[in-house]
Structures are given as structure tokens and as C-alpha cells.
Amino acid sequence: MMTRDRGRERLLPKLVALVVLLVIAYVAAVTIPVVVSTFRFSQAMDEEVLHGEANEAASLVHGRLVAAAHRLGLDISPGQIVVKKNGAHFDIDADYVVPLEFFGAFTIDWHFQPHKEGTRRPPAF
Image 1: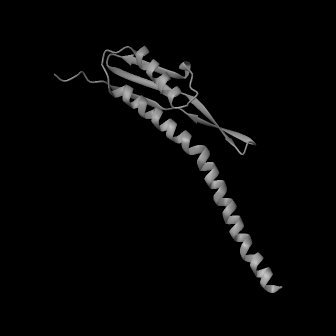
Image 2: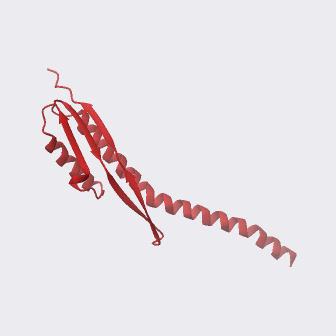
Image 3: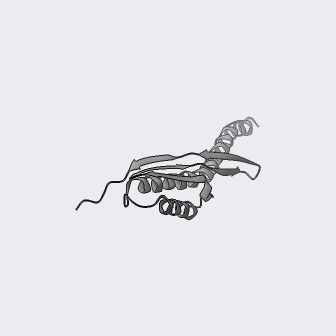
């Protein structure tokens, strides 16, 4: 009977470790896609700030960013992205929330407020 008790004593830490690993894997499965999408959207903002024609209208940049957000699965409305232009200098701000649902029991709102600014250079001849 003592052997069975020792077996149970050894099994409990292993079960706890397994549950902890499963919870970590679940949280990663929920958050990693959001991290990837928000990073790609931030990259799209960088591209818009630095590349393209210096005299391009801010509304065109805004439209491409709204399309990029939707393509990446981010629920960002056009009003949550602001593009300001002063000459060839662009300022882009976004303010959005991604809700993360865990175990179907509770939701956490993850807030993002990326800001990008830069000056586009005229093309070299």
C-alpha cells in the first residue's frame, strides 16, 4: 500500500505541471494571433509613413490602412485611424481594442495606440 501512496505523491506534481502547461499553451493560442496581426498593422503604418509619393493625399493612405486592418482581421473602424499630412510629412495614429476571450468565461480588452510619423522622400532621378 505504501507503493501506491508514493505513486500518487509523484503523480500530483506531474498533473499540476501538465495543467499549467496546458493553460500556458491555451493563452498563447489566444494571444499570439493578435500579436501577429497588430504587429503587421504597425508595419503597414510604417510603410505608409515612409514610402510612396510625397504629394499623395492623406485620404488614400487612410483608405489603404483601413483595408489592411480588415485584411488582418482587426476590427478597426475608419474613425479609429487618423492620418495627418503636412507637406511630405505624415502622422498616423490608431486607437483600437482587441477583445480576448478566455475559456468562454471572461474577456480582456487589449488596447493598442500605435503612432507613426515620418517624411516621405521624393523619388531619385
